[in-house]
Structures are given as structure tokens and as C-alpha cells.
Image 1 (spheres, rainbow, N blue to C red):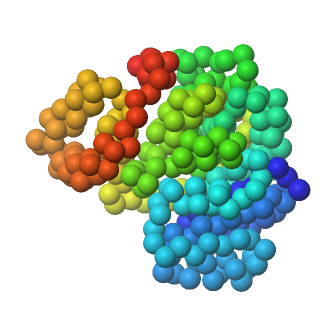
Image 2 (spheres, rainbow, N blue to C red):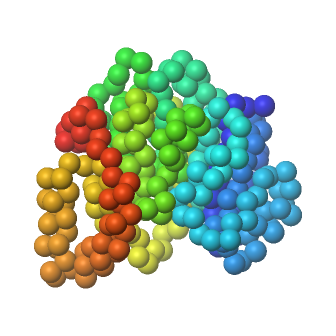
Length: 281
């Protein structure tokens, strides 16, 4: 039995979920899998149970967004957790390679994998960004230090993930990775890009309504949650200026304002070393 479990989150994408599970259950390591269904109305949970009865399926009554990954990780008992979405899965050697990295690097909290996109297996542009991170490579980590990653192409040390609080309920979904990377680093855990750990991602190519607004909202909320007040003021002012003639920026600003009281209650300043890295980036 592998030391890594897989958490897959989904919502109203029954066929994509089943196809992805066909791939994940065929991995040679036979990892335990938890599927968290974010209140689908298309029969996803029933279909998963019928085709893959040994997969632990969680039928959520509401859409938890990215925090569904945290719920899934809490149910696993493996030392490591690999995340998949309903359109992403792991290459056959990804999990054993990641486990070797974790065993050799006690400070390693999260591996950002190399992501190959679509049937062409094209490198996600993020790969190059992470591989050339200006933060360099610490001697005790297996790859460049980073403060960003793609959630559906990440493998984590379960204790580090849960101690850091998992994904933020405030952000819900969209650009949720940055805040977690900050919090892991603040707690002393390393976040590293490992090109030899490979994930496949086949995202839909169609328009995703509201996604850009959520990304801009969550970028500002992340600043409010962790950055110094001068940075908060500057980022808020920049989005407000854009909102004068950009309806998307206006919607993002309004959506962030709704969550401001909750964000202030969860506000924590980052250690100076992490803030220094963010400034460098």
C-alpha cells in the first residue's frame, strides 16, 4: 500500500470524474482515494459508487469549493496527500517519486509537480515560472523554492497541510494556492517545484463564467489576509482605479468587500523572511 492517498474534488462533471477515476484506480501503487462531491446535481456520487465502490465518496450537501480538499485530507490516514481535480491525474511514477522526496527532505511540506496539459502533453506555462523561481533552491529541498503551485498538481505532507489550516474557506475557489503556500512557509515548511513529479491536466477549453472576477477578488483577499498594510492599501487602490472603467474589476472589488469583515478576523502578518520572498517575487 502506498504512503500517499488521493483526494479528488468535483462538481457536476460526472463523466469527467469517472474517466479520471479510471486512470487513478489503475495506478500501480493502488492508492486510497477519497472523492468529495461538491453538491452535484447530475448524479456524480451515485455513478462513482457504482463504477468504483471501493472509493470513499463524500456526498456534500453544499459546494465547499477548494476546502473540499481539506475535508478529503482529514479522512485519509496516509502521510502524504495528492490532489486531483476531475480533469487531472498522476503519471504512474509520480507518487513513488514524491514519496522519496518527502522521506529524504523532512522539511518538505508541498511538492508542486510538473503539469502536462491536454492530449499533446504540453508543458503548462507555470512549469517554467516555477523552475526559474528567483527564490533559489535550499540545500534541504529537492527543487526550487516557490510560493505558488497548481492545486490539482500538488502532493503534500498531510500533517503540514492540516496544521497550516488547509485551503481557506474565505477564498472558496480560485487562486487559493498562494495563501496556502504563504502559510506553509510561515510555519517553516518548504514548498518546492519538482519536475520529476508529473501530473496530467486536461481542462475544458470553454469559457468559465466568473472565473476572472474570482481570481482578482481572491488575489486582493489574500493581500488583506497576510500582507503589510501599505501593500494592502496599494493593491486595493490599484483595483479601485481599474474599476473606474473595468466592470470585472468593479465586481471583484465589490465581492472582496463583502468578505472583508471575515478576512480581517483571520488576518495574520507573515514572518519577515516570507514577506521578503514575496517582495522579491
